[in-house]
Amino acid sequence: MFVVIEGPNGVGKTTVAGLLAERLHHHTAQPVHLTTEPTRTPLGNLLREAEAILHGRALALALAADRTTHIEDEIIPALDAGTIVVSDRYVQSSLVLQRLDAVDLGEIWSYNRYVLPPAISLYLVDDPQVIATRLAARRQLTRLEATGTPERELRLYREAFDFLNGHLWHQAWIDCRRRDPDHVVDAILDTLAPLLARRPRA
Image (cartoon, rainbow, N blue to C red; front, side):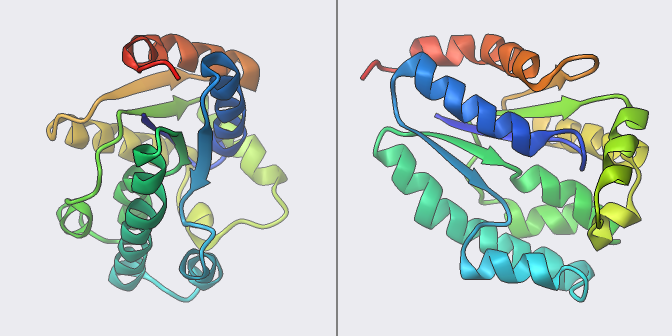
């Protein structure tokens, strides 16, 4: 089972993805692989460093290349081995962040249209003011974090959700307002329950 955690910068994706991986392993007694985009490969690490100088189409293409290797070299082998995969960010991040970088939605999708659809994509949402406060507390923002606003990112995530619905992706919203990370993961596990019930036991 392949699960994606998405949402605007500062919403808590990384914390929630890590907790979810731990809880899924405890809940299912099956191996869980936690991963992220950009990847922790040399290419992904280079992209983290190069975001300040790579812009627009060049960055969109480089991220699509990193995603392709992520799918082929990490996600599919883990799924084939019977491992649950939880990814902190996936194609939705490109459908939002590259639009902040002045790339058209259709062009972004053209670079990513052959990606592996997850079993489910979970979009975390919170109050924009709460997100803005978290971002303000960060020591340094990336170029794209500084370019967007929580309100704009949330709007673009809604548009990405609607776009992928048109491609029959399985998706759900997770309301993080006034919830700590553990309670957010509780809500996610409730959403995942039907998928987990259909998953073969180890």
